Length: 80
Ligand SMILES: [Zn+2]
Image (cartoon, rainbow, N blue to C red):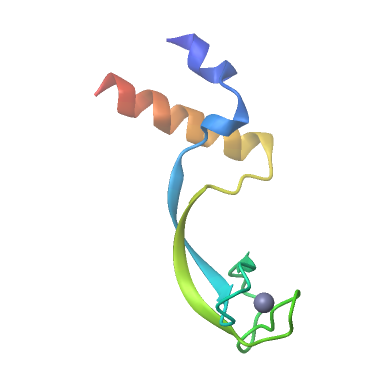
């Protein structure tokens, strides 16, 4: 099952992620939630107030170690 380690990044697992979507109906802009937001963020496109929401997104991985961690988890899930 070692081939799993070579899967492209697009196959990363997805999870429910907190996002902020634009409150303006016509505007489809949204951003991932970040701990740096003290208050409601403002839409970068139209400057409207954004609404907290959730979306299924591929997990965010920044390091090789993290990728390995998720690959390992994925592998374990396939075996079970
Ligand atoms: Zn907007």
